[in-house]
Amino acid sequence: MADSENKEQDDSVVIDFADVLDDGTSADSPKKEKKELKELRKQVNDLRKQSDDWKQKYEDAVKSADDWKNKYYSVYSDMANTRKQVAKENDEFKKYAKQSVIEEIIPVLDSFDAAMKNEPADENVRKYLEGFKMIHSKLLGVLEQQNVTIIDPKPGESYDPHTMEACTVIDGEEDEKVADVFRKGYKLYDHLIRASLVVITRKAEAPAEAEENNEAEKSAE
Image 1: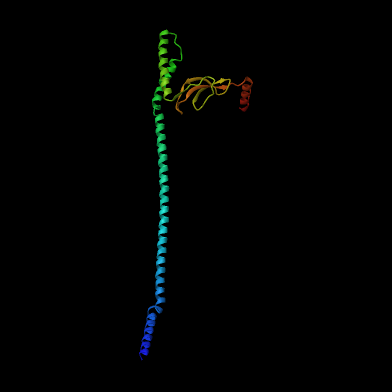
Image 2: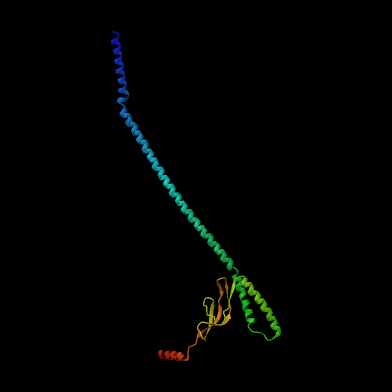
């Protein structure tokens, strides 16, 4: 009798435990897993979206950094070029700032050249002339120290149109040779202040050539 009662109790316990399993896990487990999977996918998508956003922000930051770097190099280059240009202009100004003073001295040198061109017969005047020559020599020395070059071509030298100005042409043995110098020229560094005024030659035609040219001119008329 007691054994049968115990058996009935054990069966009821088994049945109740099975009911618990059915109620807690067997029916609701797929739905719960599906819900958790859905939540997990949502989190993954959110993380992926955040990752894409941060990636885009990183790319934008790199592009912005490159743009600022290029702007910096451009501005730095412009400033360097400006500094070079300003330094060059300052050097040019320093080099040629004294040109106006030299231009005022040149007429004085012309007067010295004219005074010393002819040798005076009077002894007293000759002594004064020696003093003038000394002053003239000192002036030229000061100009040479200031990088002034005197353009004083000698007879027979070739005519240079960049440093000379021809005022008269005379017949000679060769073309474009210096025959005489009326006025000296001056340069400051490589800048021409005044060209020298010279007489140049033109090769004289032979008598036969001159006659042929005259006949040609007459026939052309």
